[in-house]
Length: 140
Ligand SMILES: Nc1ncnc2c1ncn2[C@@H]1O[C@H](COP(=O)(O)OP(=O)(O)O)[C@@H](O)[C@H]1O
Ligand SMILES: [Mg+2]
Image 1 (cartoon, protein in one colour):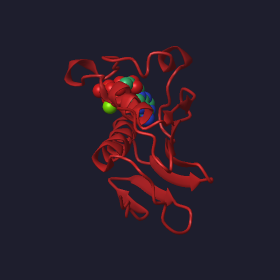
Image 2 (cartoon, helix red, strand yellow):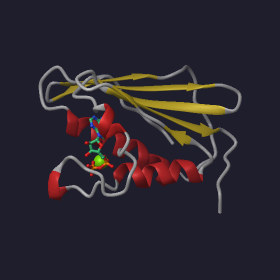
Image 3 (cartoon, rainbow, N blue to C red):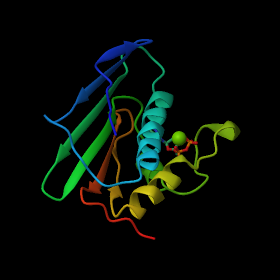
Image 4 (cartoon, helix red, strand yellow):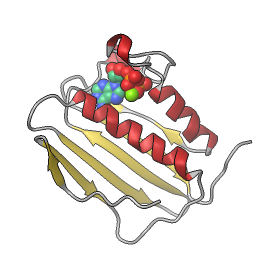
């Protein structure tokens, strides 16, 4: 999987990648992992309404795991809402959104033997780190 975004501005939103040098080769169902990343970026974009928004994509790895983090500096999520975040049908976007995004992506990462978490504070943005085993660990 190749992520080739370079820092750029789209409609006032700054997009930065902080990738470790070299490529990370890992075992996964490519379409599924792509979907997860696109969904997280979509969520950050939804939360960004004003000029000054900043999305940061970070990669890191150790011997066993890779970590991919999607971070925004926007509205953040309250402590109360964080608890419901990965529940199916949980949405704050009204009837036009399914609220299924994070629960499905959580399932995908879990089925790869990985983990997805969230750190967020209302008003201060959100960080979603995804950890995946480099050797793959797909459950049937
Ligand atoms: N980056 C983010 N910033 C603020 N809120 C977020 C972010 N990502 C997710 N959320 C909150 O989590 C909810 C659930 O997200 P998701 O499962 O993707 O469903 P949907 O995007 O359809 O609402 C969103 O409605 C939103 O309230
Ligand atoms: Mg979503």
